[in-house]
Amino acid sequence: MSRWYFKRVFAAVASALMLAAGATVVTAGPAVAAGGGCIPWDRSGWSIQVCGSNQGRDAYLDFYVNGVNCSLCGLTIYKQIEGNYRTRIDNEPATYGHHGPWEHYLSGSQRVRLIVEPNDSGLSFAGPWVWY
Image (cartoon, rainbow, N blue to C red):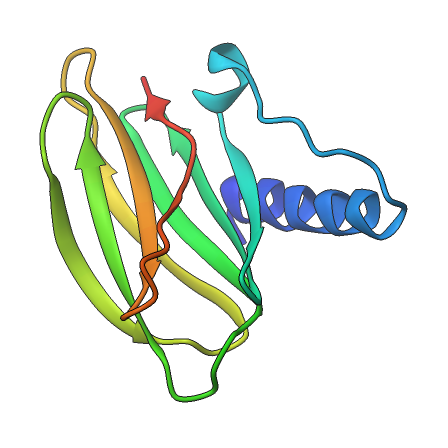
């Protein structure tokens, strides 16, 4: 298995342990986010971690569903390049566990992130910006 997979699993486990212990999770700063990170979201019955990492110029965007508001809901997944509108890249069922990754080649000083939206909820969960 690749290095980014182990980084992602470690980040998810560490965040889950911190949340279980009642700790406040702080979003990683830009220097850390360039190499990977996850942002946990807990709103309106949804618990989703949106993540991003890079290996050189390849960005990997994925997310984890830890809690759902409805069993038949779907999720719309967007990729956003900084300074541009987001682009829909997939639709997924709102099932527990890992979704992705989606790969994106980073050109120049481009920054990219993943956005996950439960359908018909009005909610939007954005991940960290990833860049080279």
